[in-house]
Image 1 (cartoon, rainbow, N blue to C red):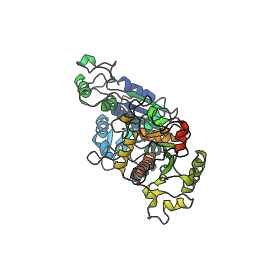
Image 2 (image 1 turned 30 degrees about the vertical axis):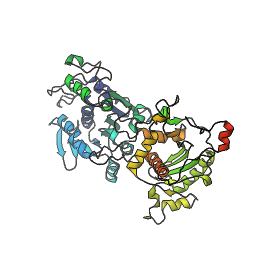
Image 3 (image 1 turned 60 degrees about the vertical axis):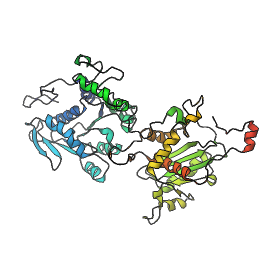
Image 4 (image 1 turned 180 degrees about the horizontal axis):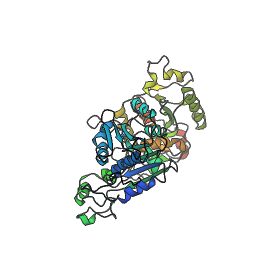
Length: 482
């Protein structure tokens, strides 16, 4: 921010409301704005992320006259009960022209007294109302708090509206780590490209003993040495390890809300091999157009183990396109469609609310899907049982037991792996029956239909290796027994 004697102090303050320097991690986040168009301040609780975000909005409102700054959280009530209080407290009264609680906007005096700037806060979800509101704005800064709670679609929509002249035209955001989700991929894993930069901080260093006095709280162990030692110690001594990993140590590796925490790349991903001709194959399907369509090629071996050996996962295409892909990929991966044992599919494709159902469109391409059981809680429990190692089946290859579900380690199956690593319980309904968060779940739904079909089948889906092959091999055991 440009220093101007006519303005009151607008900056970081200590607990007594006196001007103070930024924390080193806050200062690093400020400097990143000169290097990157899209800046993320990630990390644990209590390292000054929200204060940094609010100050950046105020500085941009002052430095760029007539600026329009968009902020918010996934739920507007969350923003109003937390971030908004910090934002209002940091705006000097001399600069606050108007706080319109009906329109959810704050008008601030800029360095040009004739051109005040505006900070608008809205609910940042994928509802039509929210997306339309974003599409009707021409903004100079997008500053979401807790961006890990948002859908990537919201970020993309706002990025397309960074068109305000004489402004930073940046995205700045805060987040707590939430596994290897889209935020991690875009910023930390650099999949967003060279315009994405991030800084991350931690309340405490994992493996360091809890502080016993204030002298223990140094920048060697924390990114906020002003935190009371007993506050940190209470966290470390009270909360479960997975919660600490995310909110105290700032780890991206995992968090408690994962539905399938038992997934392991080194166990469930397997090198492709030739599928025995006698194994039963099933093709499963979850419908999508705006969201991805997911079609999985699966087989069951003689031990009852289930394998996903190929996947089609793509959005924005029509049934004719997906039908052609299904036929082409089946030819490529050695699947004879006439011999497919089962075709479990999303029950919604049979809905007769349309003049021609989705299922009937597929039938026009000689593909006949079967209505699957869409029991969500039951299907999740069943899939978890397939993923869990069976202690009765220990071996040198599986010292903790062998699971019953495997995925061929090929590029086509990467969307499945991405989804299962980030498939989480919905945090919005803590007092209701647990249900998964409805996003990035199409391969998960597809597999749930498949496993429900297998488990509900009155006939066994397991096919056994022909006896003459076992005798030729000199063993009576199944081809993949342990």
